[in-house]
Length: 277
Image (tube, rainbow, N blue to C red; front, side):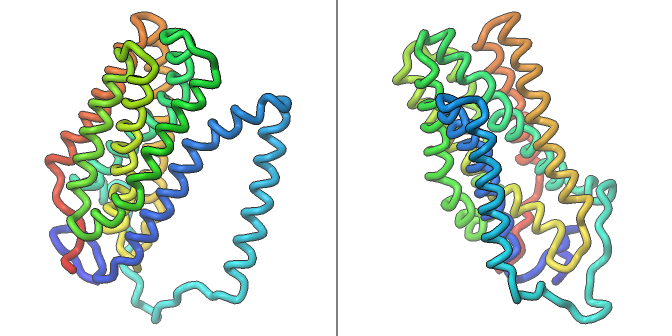
């Protein structure tokens, strides 16, 4: 491990790849969960909760099998790095940019997309609820196509290029969602938006892993990063929903695009965090 430009990092790339894979699973679950749960409602309001409980039990059993007899990583006494405190790492521009990207991603993906896309499909495009589910599925497909690619790009080319490209594509596509005139165009733009958001999440998580390092204690740093996404997911539907009710869907999706662009501006000013190979 070494300190480079104020960044606590290590020479091995596996912690960052692991962080990217974790982000991939979290994002796919957050996007596909409402889609699958919405489809299960036809079997009754209790059906999604029953299936969710079964999946939790399955995850618990699988985790228990995978972790059985496998001790965690150990380090020699005194080899652990210093504890990273949230207020200290907040001084780093890359961490502030990561918080902004997490907030914007939570606002756009976990919040506005799940809350407003179904309403737009039904009210503005005059389609049935099933088409709202299809639109979310198309967005999830776009995510799946770029998540793994984004992780590889982040390791080979650096964290900033895929993040900047993803935020830019997401912003443009999100702004277009509120003004497209037809369902085919809406589905096409949803696919592009999914491609953009898929480029963002793994590299941002990898950037935070770069800052924390492999032997540093940075629980509050990771918690703050996750909370930024949660705050965005809570505020996004509330604020954008109020805007949609007052002025229409176009300004609501446009506001979401502005949030994404603000995160992009911060990343333009942030340094690269990927350690030298």
